[in-house]
Amino acid sequence: MALTIAGTELASRLILGTGGAPSLRVLDEAIAASGTSMCTVAMRRLDPGTSGSVLDTLDRHGVRVLPNTAGCRTAREAVLTARLAREALSTDWIKLEVVADERTLLPDGPELLEAAAQLVADGFTVLPYTNDDPVLARRLQQAGCAAVMPLGSPIGSGLGIGNPHNIELIVAEARVPVILDAGIGTASDAALAMELGCAAVLLASAVTRAQDPARMAAAMAAAVHAGWLARGAGRIPKRSQAEASSPRHGMAVL
Amino acid sequence: MNITVNGEDRRVGPGTTLAELVEQVAGSGRGTAAAVDGTVVPRGGWPAERLRDGVVVELVTAVQGG
Image (cartoon, rainbow over all chains, first blue to last red; front, side):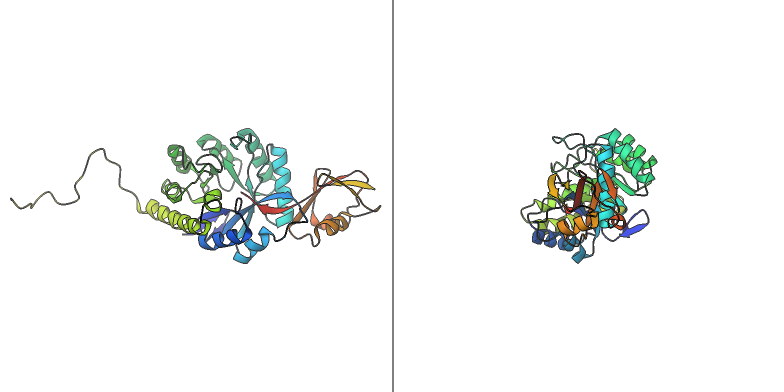
């Protein structure tokens, strides 16, 4: 059930954000339980007083590191942050985030598209966090992004997938993997994302801020797998009326 | 001379290179990236990058996030 992004195969379709974990030990356990192949990190000013690096934890699990541009509000900031991440982590993969304001953390479409175009031209493999807007998703693909990552609902809200029809529309015309990013609250949200045809799910808070992060990580892994199986299996159409599954004929006359 | 590192004033010797500054602040520099006056300086260029008086240096690394 491997996921392929820009020609690179990832064994797991669950991408884990590392933000929000109360400690590296908790993160370590969550990563193990999730079976993930790739984790996101943020880029921040060096703090010499910090003991232990998230990179050591990720190295131990052999997972791929996906830096993000979290906190950036303009294309200029995001492009610079991506370049810093490339230097620091020796990867040209970037989770591109350009948000409009702190209250909603919703992507700023024009800034996002501008940053994506610049980063693609600079040789990056760009995975943009975007709105659940099929037209913006199309434009990001046209700009050369390696995936599109629409939100289910605002970051950290746990509200699940607010507009499943838009996610389906994005999936229907996507030529790159669609990764549901943000808003997942519990396992059924992750399963739904996969049932809608997403190639993967990216989540952080739902696991790292759960009462038992490792247990929720295991639940998410199972949900992503179940949703992926169900999507491939082809669900029955929804009907407005019942349809008996037992034969109508041959009933005994009682 | 005086420079700014991650928003704080810092005194460094004349002719200090970016490589020397990173070593002072970050030790090995593994997982660290540097920008001088808003321009990213690739790791390979650190030894040759002599810091001028008044430059603004940002040193970043990966933290939990996303």
